[in-house]
View 1: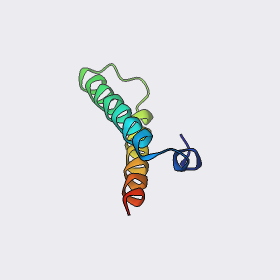
View 2: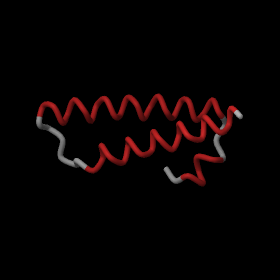
View 3: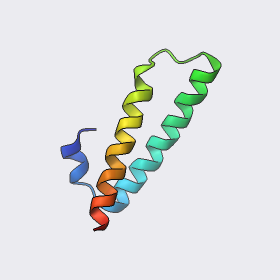
Length: 62
């Protein structure tokens, strides 16, 4: 999801999206550990999106 789209979400929506991303990241880590991960670039994409959401949650709190 692009940053523009994330900026229009409320804090509660961002936290829910963050939880979904963390679940996806866990799933990707398990796939990587078992050798089933086909798209290795997804790990990096999810990690960066988690950072974006955390940044927006932090700025929304101020």
